Structures are given as C-alpha cells and as structure tokens.
Image (cartoon, rainbow, N blue to C red; front, side, top):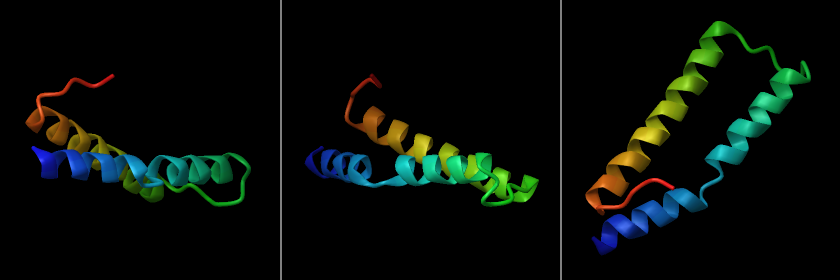
Length: 65
C-alpha cells in the first residue's frame, strides 16, 4: 500500500493536467491546429491517466473526491 500511495502521490505532482490545459488553450487561440487525430490522442491520454488514477485508488481502497 505504501508504494501504491507513493505512485498516486507522484502522479498528482505531475503537470499532466496543466499541460493538457495549455494545449487546449493554445488550440482555442488558434496557435495549434487541433486535427481529429491530435484530438483523439489527447482524449486517449486523458482516459489513460484517469484509468491509472482509478486503478491506484481502488487498490488503496480510496474513493475519488
């Protein structure tokens, strides 16, 4: 459980959410072209991150806030 908690903490410290938000902001400002392929990759990355978080929280017996 300690290792799982450390992994969950590490993931929380990563800048994934901030980086994805910056990508969305740049796309909205027209600074990058958000093609359907790029959008699909970003959505897949979000789903992967969400799945990893949920699996870790379930392994620790925690509930999402």
